[in-house]
Length: 147
Image (cartoon, rainbow, N blue to C red; front, top):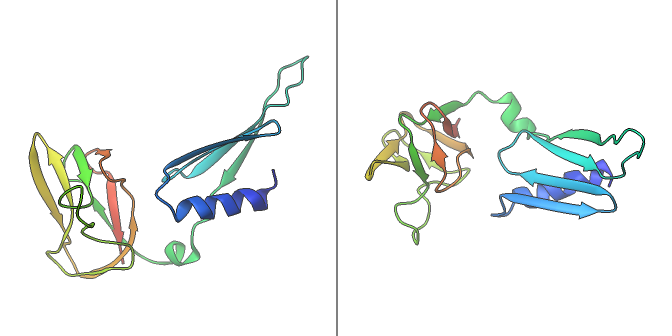
């Protein structure tokens, strides 16, 4: 599989709710996982004498806009479960590109059955939502990037 095809697949996956994709074709295993910095491809065509597996690392190209911008990272103040919306059937608090004001609720972190609202500490625009809905987050883990 050519690098162009892999980049195309990455772009397609990036615009969906799919978090993990595993693809196997003609001796190639490809596993894509969102929020990972790299993707590992394995060539299954093994040399019987030394059983080598050719590993090729493909770095996901970041949008130039995010590389050149200074952004503020909203980090988790506690260990818990990240929720992007107030309830499972309601829309998320924020989306990429939304303008937020100081004090706006960005997400919820549930810890010991207590729902803790995480608020914006300054005005800005949502650049990236790093944490996945209903995922466990650690203290200090980046949840959201705001410019």
